[in-house]
Amino acid sequence: MNKILFAASECVPFVKTGGLADVCGALPKEFSKEYFDVRVVLPYYTFIPEKYKKDFKFLTSFQMNMGPLVGTRYVGVFEYELDGVTYYFIDNHDYFDCFYPYSEDRWDLEKFIFFDKAVLSMLPLIGFQPNLIHCHDWQTGFIPVYLKNDFQGDQFFWGMKSVMTIHNLKFQGMWDTKTVAGISGLSMNLFTPDKLEYKKCGNMLKGGLVYADYITTVSATYCDEIQTPYYGEGLDGLLRARHYDMQGIVNGIDNDVYDPAKDSKIYKNFDVSTFRKNKKVNKAKLQADLGLEVDPKKYMIGLISRLTDQKGLDLINYCIEGIVDDFTQLVVIGTGESKYENMFRHYAWKYPEKISANICYDDNLAHKLYAAADAFLMPSRFEPCGLTQLISFRYGTVPIVRETGGLSDTVEAFDEYKKTGDGFSFANYNGDELLNTVNYSKFVFFDKKTQWNKMVERGMNKNYSWAVQKEKYENIYNYLIG
Image (cartoon, rainbow, N blue to C red; front, side):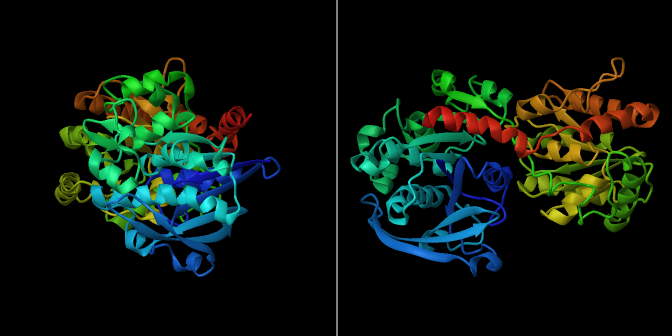
């Protein structure tokens, strides 16, 4: 049996700020228990819900040496089982007593370096010897570095492989080299341009990409894009050099969580045979709850997103008054940069019957919007994968996207002449192209209703469950382990 350890900074249902948590929560459950023993290790954040923490089992504790800037630190290890998956939690209140998993860069760097070393240090003590450690994003980038350097003096770690998954290349975990060496205890010989150094900084993600045995990204197109200077965030040369050890695998979603036929969070359930009637019920009830004009014939566009530059919100700002005409409504759910939070608040104040700005993240409201909206807007500058468009398909909501990353891989542009496609897309990062694409979607919605409904059917019949995608990870694991 192959033993796999997932290492991540977040994982549903314990902690979530984005899609990373969904992946690490859903994927481990999908592997066959007959062939794979997949476990997950996370930081023991104090804000993890009490309903889980009360059943955590203490396994062991020890003192761990870090670098000279940090010294010796306490490490506690707890265990919990959920849905057949064993979870480990690394405990240290100095680092993980918080209300949110991330804070300022320097402190985050130290606590995740601590986490990375603790993950490896605990393994001999808890009696779990994985064949492979699957690391997710920069927060776990030093696990492959430690594994191939400081821990090779212990036979327990010989032959242990590592995979590094890039969920978003933009975030890399960087600070000046002396500080990073002083925190980590790693030799200064490793802080060179061919290893951990980038622009005179120690770079955690770069370290993982250099030392991991294999690299994955969360879509095939993003895998290609990040090997170019425009998308490569300064690491495109390294990624081109590792081209043959890298693969893009589109994320999946949990079809049990996102199932409009059974979802208890929406107003009225529906499936591919009943969406024509029941989506209108969901729309009317959501309009009433949000204070919008109640009219199921309106074209409702949804947006659920982190409110950041990456998500193309500057394009929306450019053309929002053209988007929300007398026949169109826009519902926004999300938090992020204050300029975009205030932008949506302003337009919701200016057009209260057309725009609803919900500057928060409310999972119940999100499900209601997926079920009520006619279209979902994702004009991203770049998008490693994106989950919103995959969930939208399930709920009969048509994506409007820019052709980048995972959006290119998952949304097929509508062709009214061939009668194919399941969404709308535009190529250039341009506000006029966005507006033209939205206006074309309105034309199809209002004037070609039969083709619109067929497009919805095609989207609802797509399958992006983890049961399909997990086989690609299994192939990588088997290839590396041998």
